[in-house]
Length: 274
Length: 257
Image (cartoon, rainbow over all chains, first blue to last red; front, side, top):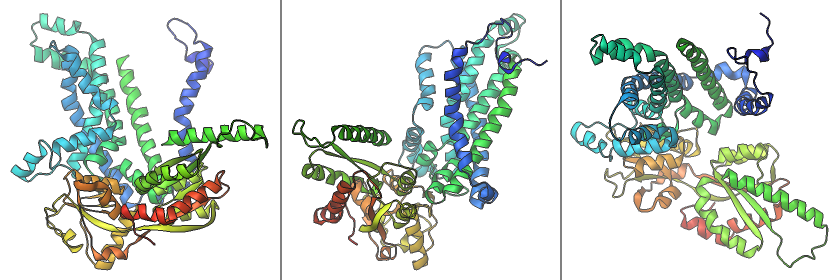
């Protein structure tokens, strides 16, 4: 099987070739994303890289980033999963409005999300004031607040991805299950969930990757303290003030983690659909 | 801001082209030559420089002053990487050194202002903070700048000289972020520059402390080597360092060197 590389991208089923003209803007688009990242790699101080990445502050930030992104992704699945089902299958009025609200974190600057969280859960916020007075709990500056900020920005990624696969999966199998006497919960558990599992997985991967890159909401809501709230993006932002080499090294680390997450986790889940 | 800089560059290139084509003949309509002075300045100088801008443009007809305000370290990186600056005003000497080490400073940088740290509290100072040592009280949520940024380095220096160890709930990446945690009521106190306290107005209250003199921050200004508008840059530098500039700087809370 030695097909030319270009042929491989053609549509196997129809045999319709790819219009050559599309390659030019496609290549430009790819370059726009790939070249700056390559520039980052070129700028890196490779001999010092291990030392820069193994510093205590870098390891703390990596650990915190992975931990909070993991918890946030779980929250996205537990809360965003049912929300996606409601959005895809619900028969309630005002669903369009609900959906546009859910998509807000996608379009808002993250720092706006951070401020919104602060004015809700901050010490003088709507809910935060009560929490402080009644239980002495303050949410900002805690690791929990980082999780909240990340969940806020990442939720739509999971919801949109899952809602899409719920729609394409259709409702026929559930209908069949219902005629066979399955109660809604049983049909949901045994039919719907397995059907949309690939969509859920790819949504979770996207959410996880988004959590890893979260900066604006975190700095506005949680602050920045090593080991508690200072995730990798916050450390990158801080280091670029004093040690550009360290900032570049940490940026590369983020790139590598993100690429690993997307490249290795996503295709597998997408292949699952086929 | 980048857009402004970019359009300023485009404009400058365009004008330079026109000037070249016109040769020595300034015989056209009697309009003053349109020129753009590009000033890269520390974010903390935003208010002061913006106030000086119309005064400068009044004395120099046809000149448009364009600012690129930002973190001094970012600005220094931009200049080193070819940013089109005529004049650079930094919030500390080390970022200016980055630029001068790259051979991009014309002459010696001049220190034109100083800034010291001040304790910032919510209005009315509810926690009753009276001294630097009070910031170490365990019942307080204190925010400071991270040691990597100038305001954090100054705070660290004062901690070392006083022997007071702060346990902050957050080390913020910049001074405005630190201030924000206090203005939103989420921190009981913070350490920011005297000028930030002044700029925040009634949203906060400042508490000065004598140990702040241990970490005075110098603001150097310098004309960039081979700047296309070096003469204008020098004129703006004279305005900043002169009596008028000192008055505006003083009312913003800056000290004089």
